[in-house]
Amino acid sequence: MIKDVRFLSGNTIKIIAAILMVIDHFGLIFYPSVMVFRYLGRLSMPLFAYMVAEGTRYTKNKIKYLALVLGLGLICQIAYAIYEPSNLYFSILITFTFSMLIIYALKFMKKCCFENKKWWLIAISILLFLLSIAFTNAFCYYFTVDYGFWGCMLPVFASLFDFRGVDNEKTKKYDKLILRAITFSIGIIVFVFTSSNVSFSIYALFSIPLILLYNGSRGKLKMKHFFYVFYPLHLLLLEGLYMIIYTI
Image: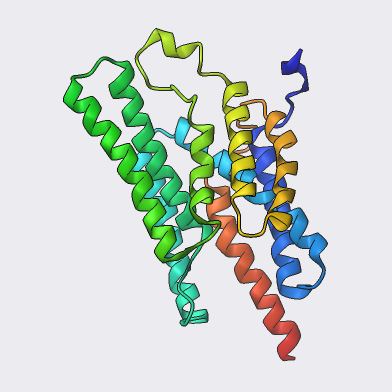
């Protein structure tokens, strides 16, 4: 029965998230006192975060995928440094870079633990996973990273029941879309109630129904790198429009 109500493809969720993100940033730039724009925008980040987790699940070239996100993130950092040199701020692309590093460490740990690898390899994989989390936490403590530590951890929740690539028949019964959606929903709750402004972040909870309606399909269009190009492009266009309007 539940499969009948899952009608949102990955492409659809990305498009919804992109529209909400534009609304959020449009409000921030042009109407900062009108909070409804910002409230709607709270749904965008969790939706993209879930798609990042799905991307790490299905990508064939993990290094290329990670390098793309990190590379675009660094390009954005250069732009931020030029625009506002006094504020060392790391964008959401850096947030998702940390997410991917932790997810890959988690995947490696799963393979070692569930494929009966040697004890020392299991120990190393566990240590790497813990170190990836500790390093992310330390980086977020000393620097301003978009959405903070729990923002980095959010896609990881969606990967807890991702056993793709693990050669163990017992794990396959737990590799379910609904389990990934449920653990991710728990992650959203943690993300909201650990934020510095719960009354603002709480609107992110409204993204949970959309996540539960995801059917696991990509969709007809090829939008693999859509967000990573769209994110800096839409900011550039909005900032350009603002400069044109208010400098004439």
